[in-house]
Amino acid sequence: MEEQRKLPIDIQTSKLLDWLVDRRHCKLKWQNSGLEIREKINNAIQDMPENEEIKQLLSGSYIHYFHCLRIVEILRRTEASTKNIFGGYSSQRMKDWQEITSLYEKDNVYLVELASWLVRNVTYEIPSLKKQISKCQQLQQEYSRKELDHINNAASLRDKFFASCRQFGIRGKDVHQEVLSLCKDLPADLSNIAEEARNLSDIILLYEACVEFVCGRVPEPVVPMLKYIQTRGNTTVYEWRTGQAPTSVEKAVSKECGEPPPIQDTDTIDWGDGGMVGTEQADEIDWGISVDGNTEGPGADLIDWGDDTSSTVEIKVLDCADEGDGVARGQDALNILEHTETRNLFINELTELQVFLTQRIAEMREEADILSINQFQTAPAAVQCQDVARATAMVTLVGDIVQRLTEVKMRHLLLIHASPRYVDRVTELLQQKLKQAEAVGEKQHLMVQKRQESLEEQANLEPKLDLLIQRTKELKKLIEADISKRYQNRHVNLMGVFV
Image (tube, rainbow, N blue to C red):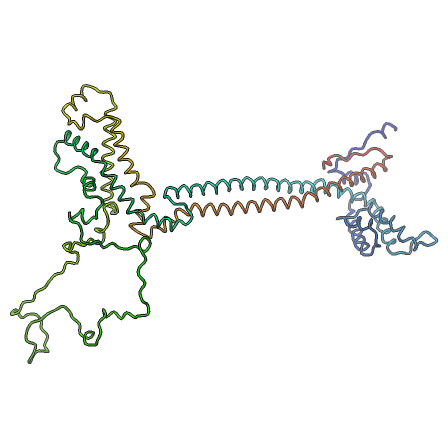
């Protein structure tokens, strides 16, 4: 018997309620009694004396049997004046709480209630709070990772924006105005390119010599546009097409790139009469038809159907596009490098020279053999005297001019010059990455806000979890002590309470 008392009683927490019912410590249907006790406790706490300890006991989320015993002990001191000679109390407070303790002790309702709370805390409440806290921590890590990604993406988009601005040669402060200022410098840049083309004389002579040596005399001139720009410069298309310099140039002034139009006097109404004054001039309309003949006498009011062959009518046809006036209008008013067709012709001839020089360098770098020696033995001196270094310098010079005409900045500026409204598209294209960076920045601030909300939620849950763990440990000790008294103070272990 003594050895049996030394053996501990191990009870699995998940089966604690079944253990108590099986051993007849409590009834299976104890919930009704528990609800009745809860109702009496809610009514009793409405009328309590001013006592700090009682306030602390009632501040908890729930009140169990042992709290009620402590409240009764406190009321014995505070309600001592209501005690009669028979040991009873006339105070209604004391009667209410004594009744509550009696109901708790009946059928051991207090024990099964404590056990149900312990099982619920261990099985549901504590794991739920831990899961919520773990989720908050995972969200914080995810928000931090997304925040870092958004920071990197925003920095990358801003770098791309400034890289695109560097391609255009602008700072990126006011993209629209800076691009327009570049558009104003376009004619000077094209003139500089035309001046650089004057340095290609030796290359053109070398190309002509090779063409004449390989193909003989050709009827068509070689690279005529390059030769023209070398001799005449970046003239108007009218002069290149007609061979004569225009007497005047009438260019269409763009609203974006040109000067603003003069301000007209809005106080004067334009009636559209061409400045004519007087009713006689206004009433008389000149149709441009002169009819000679007698209009007097009878029959003057008759309609002339034109079948009279006795008189001839001369018709003068005016050519509105007469080139004889020497005025360059429309496309003819543009410079050669501003006009799309002539500029493409210029670039094609430069590319032709570039390909020729590249092929010539590859041929000169190959090992000399008898066939190549015999082939160029009768070539002109300009062809035979070339070496790899000089040809490389030539192809570099041609490539620089081609690169300046075909770079991204120049292409966009030429499109703006051709269609001034294109500047809005360029501005939108450049600012698109900046807008994307701003949008990513807003997402970054949103991640920071969500992470802060998750931190606040975790800060609110952790005290609740600590308090619940503390009360669960207290419940465990109270249940183990109560069951131990029922089994001759044997040691009781509630298994599975991992808090």
